[in-house]
Amino acid sequence: MTNERRYDIDWLRVIAIGLLLIYHIAIVFQPWATLIGFIRSEELMENLWKPMTMLNVWRIPLLFYVSGMGVYFAIRKRNWRQLLLERTTRILLPFIFGIFAIAPLHFLIFQSYYKMPLGYFPHSGHLWFLGNIFAYVLILSPLFFFLRKNEEGRFMKGVASILSNPIGPLLVSVFFIIEVMVVKPQIFELYAQTWHGFFLGLLAFFFGFLFVYSGKAFWPTVLKWRWLYIGLAAGLYTLRVLAFNMKSLDYLMAIESNLWIFGVFGLAYKYLNRPSAALRYLSQAAYPVYIIHMFVLYAGAMLILPLKIPLLLKFVGVVAFTFALCYLIYEFIIRRVFFLRPLFGLKWQFNKVEKVQMLSEMK
Image 1 (cartoon, one colour):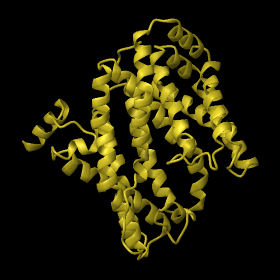
Image 2 (image 1 turned 90 degrees about the vertical axis):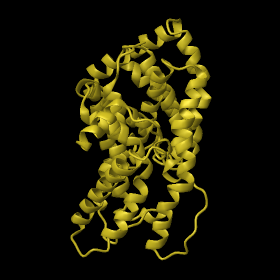
Image 3 (image 1 turned 120 degrees about the horizontal axis):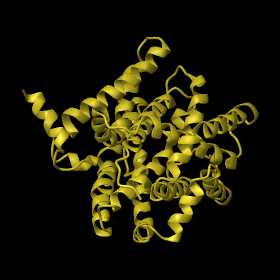
Image 4 (image 1 turned 60 degrees about the vertical axis):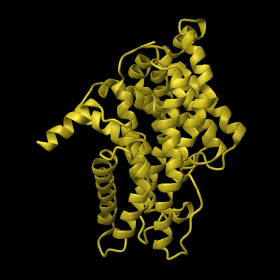
């Protein structure tokens, strides 16, 4: 096991949420946007779909992997009661609050934009991810604490031995292949509120924990072989585009997904495992921004799409509006109003970095 702070994992969480925002904005400009409840532009940018589909097979699984890694670090300093209390306040509370106070906003904006009767029933919307994560903590924490108590046992040494080989991470894909063969998802990339998304996330969450639990076995492997994994992933993506019209066989997409993720882990471990002021700020902001981004995005689409400006400017405008307003809401409302902080996954009290920054702003 390791006690070192892993800045690359923090960066991956931030980057994954940033990519999530851009991906959701790109949906607005796709012909099928309204079919999944997004406001749709009358002018389309269908050429965005090819890079979107490359991203789509690994962006959500990456977040599940990273969330499992986070639980490993959490149980290093907590017993099972403390873990459940911490995850209840940090995940379940924002999830329940979001169902009643955040998710309705983008539904109402959608209805208003299309002049539909206004109405809402409790729905997790984009916050389904939080519900899954909390369920995984409940399901897997007994196993995780058992493994922690036996951290020098045969299982840990066996996992470390397997992951120290370049083939080791590839063997993980076998479990994801079994998942798609058993569940038979209608669409591989449809993770939200599906059994496929639930079980795929459960696997990624579990293996994310194991990757860090194995000590330093996994990270030198993905560091050394990162370009092999990325090259294989790019090959499967090219095959998917050219031979399968972007909809490949599910088991090939499961393999491609993991290959992209292992390559990204290797790149992050090499280039991002270092502290920075930007990371300290963004790692705090990422979670609240994830919670609020959908209604901000819908508001931006409602305001910008009717404008008589070039299509590219509309896309850039929605991107800029979404990121800017999310920042302003986080920085001047969520971050500074103490009773709102826990509703968005932040601690009641400011940490030392936030206190120093706010004091400097007051001078």
